[in-house]
Length: 338
Image 1 (spheres, rainbow, N blue to C red):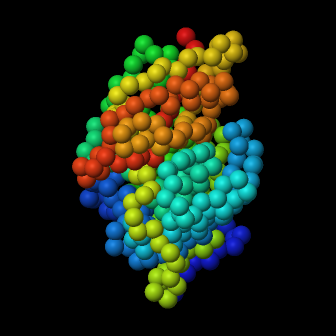
Image 2 (cartoon, rainbow, N blue to C red):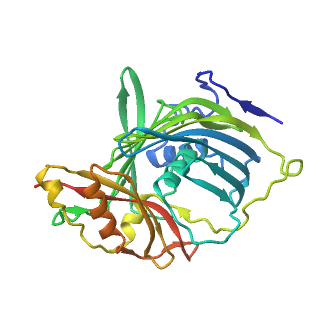
Image 3 (tube, rainbow, N blue to C red):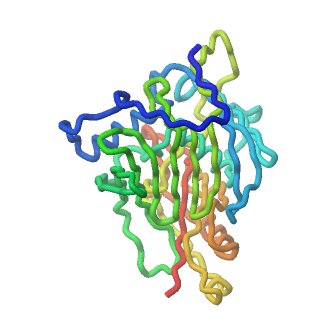
């Protein structure tokens, strides 16, 4: 069994020959984006089974450390895996003992988001969409990066004082190499930093990850990453599609049918509080909001205003292979003083 077991030693592994691309090839941004998805996806079809254990620290809406926990996953195929998450306030096992309706809360959303950074750091944008991909340089200190900018062409209604808006996602890599280091989502201050990169099963895996929404939300490090033999070490695996499909908010914004415009709380106006509320949501097969929670917010009054309005929003059903599908996604509501 091939394994990586990590304690507290900090190191960085970069592999020049791993997923390097020749500058002479100069693929267009869409091709580079597809290559980056393949180079960073540990859960791609045909991958060798693996086992991962991650420790994490959760932070509250003020950026203060709240609690610690662990997440452990055994993976055999995209639709055959087992996940166990344990923390003082949030525990989850997939497959679950009961076939209960899908729900979501801030803690669950953040832990799954953190796991994605190690396993599948680029979100699923669905099938044909109105997204465009461009490339631009970016510098962090003295480090030069190349960013792939994914943008939605969903129009913003300027008449609304508070509304969801499409997000501009940037995936920044080392120049001429598909090694993802940083992700930014403009509009709600999402920043994901990926450190201690390792080559595992010909995939670039970040062993240290941090997720911030203006303030630090969750950090994690991979303690164990190893190949896994499901015959020698059998565990109960999820083999159905009960989990909601995780889809980028960029795509879901384009499926909106009706919106109740959130009111701007008088307290927030008086205190000159503005900014963006980030919500995690489950959208049903019928296109209604079935579960909703606040991930990040400038103020509790804006959080409550967003929850009260967004729970009534409706969307056209998201189709996966032509079938209406339950969706796990992100919704943003912007509050701007005029």
